[in-house]
Image (cartoon, rainbow, N blue to C red; front, side, top):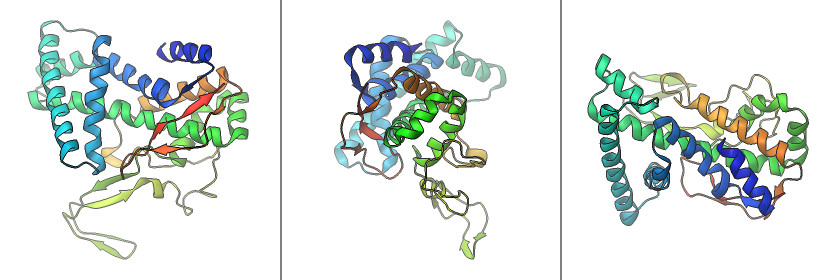
Length: 282
């Protein structure tokens, strides 16, 4: 299990940067294995993907946009070659499954197949890294909650939902209505893009009693961290599973887990919310 080896190394060192050494590598290892990408390609795989996802935050300028474009071209070329190889030699992986669906049902065009693989890569690790990092920071900031989670492991699934709500890894999304909509007295015309602040919705006091309080046992936790409706996050079950394993392993393995610094540094941007680093000690 990838998380076990990383925690073994961190235990020997007495601490780690939980983002760089744990929350960052773990999801990309998982999604790469699912797609069938060789372990030797994971580093460049992640480098290209990290450059691409910066685009959605709207903070890039000329040099950054060029870097993102180069990363997108490199990823497209990689997956075109990888898909070509998998057509000749199918394996037990998600990429081979997508190819089989395309050939059997004409479900995807070639460009859609490549685009889907790239989307699964980007969405399959960046947001999960932020979920684990933000959630761990919340647990570090609430020692009594962290202790409860350690002593009540059955609470872990509920805790993941509350950590998703409390500090959502994606703060903003958008929708374009296909017909005129009136919402609480406000008219939204057809075709007008509407920005939806998921982080604010997840702290809505009309939906969540005592919304600013972290409550790992919160019931009826209908957050929108994964979106809603037909655009609900495809990878939600995988993200939940990875977070469940990560939080459970961390609090079980390191009962004296604490932050090694009071300073917190966040990545810039309006859409994604995640830490650049989170030093911890055991």
